[in-house]
Length: 159
Image (cartoon, rainbow, N blue to C red; front, side):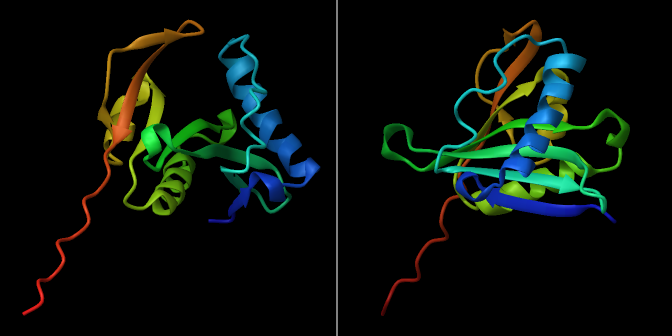
């Protein structure tokens, strides 16, 4: 693989890198999928947001995702979003590579994703299960999915 996996907390992203990540997302979600929603939703620069991406040797971003930490109900969990791959780079395992990197960071905590319905089987291969009713977002069918928390191993009892 000649692509380099990168990861950064939002606060550590330089302007040029953030621009390239957002540019790819706009290219895929707004232009290609014709979703006229506000791509800049205020979450990219939150302190608990991490960005993962793959870049070519010449610095082109070809795949990206956003990992956000959440604390609903006081419980730590994660949410993956804005996962996309440049059209010319699809079918080469880039999405799986980024997803595995993000899930390694999630560890044993639960993780949610609102998946485009046609990708539900792909996410299921990574441990996600359907977690609610299908819904339509900007004209595209989605399904809420959850990768449940892994229970901690039982502690050995002391004699």
